[in-house]
Structure formats: structure tokens, C-alpha cells
Image 1 (cartoon, helix red, strand yellow):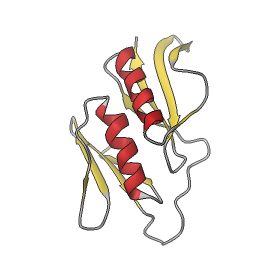
Image 2 (cartoon, one colour):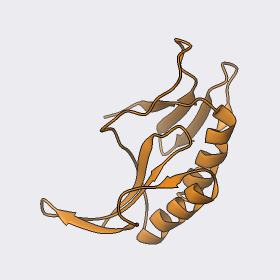
Image 3 (spheres, rainbow, N blue to C red):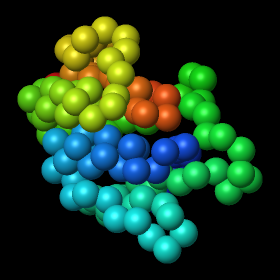
Image 4 (cartoon, rainbow, N blue to C red):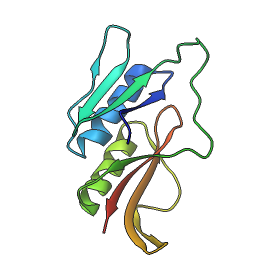
Length: 125
């Protein structure tokens, strides 16, 4: 359904360090910086990008927004969480663990990135 996802970041280098570590725990190679200063991650046919807002204003997180990354296992989701915390992320919501509802059983691991964006690693059980 999606071709790419792009998030705003005020400190591109701090965000790259964070995402290189957190996404690296999910098997994603480190991002590279393009000539426009955006960080680009490519994995399994998808693109994830970080950029300073093109309008020159500060990047802000979307209230009510969450970006989820697929994890191959609960252990991988835990590694994502630990790597994110060790590289400038903030733990939010409940600790990583199983959540059930609407007939689904998921393992979720939530963080805020250095720009305040709410992200999670999700493993379907």
C-alpha cells in the first residue's frame, strides 16, 4: 500500500544515529544521506526517510500518529527498543510486551525518536 514514509527531524545526525541502531536491530542496513541532506533507509522494497521540513519550520511529531516497523520476533522488537533507548529514544506507553484485542495478539515495543515521533516495532503472534 505504501511506497515510502518520511518523518521530519530537526537534528538529522541524532535521528540517523537513533534509527541506524533501532532499525539495525530489525535487520535494516544503516541509512545513507542523499545530496539534499535526507537520510534514506531501504528494506524489503520499502523506503523510510528522515528530512528537515522543506518549509524551514521546526519538525514536530504528529499527535495521535504512530509509525510501526515489522519485527520478525518478540526478541527483535526488544532489541529495537533497547537500541533506540541507548541512542536517544524515550520509552513510552507500557513496556514492550503482548497486547491483545480485536481478535489479534501482538508483541509491541513503543518509543519516541529524538524528534518526538511515536514509533513501534510490532511482531504478530
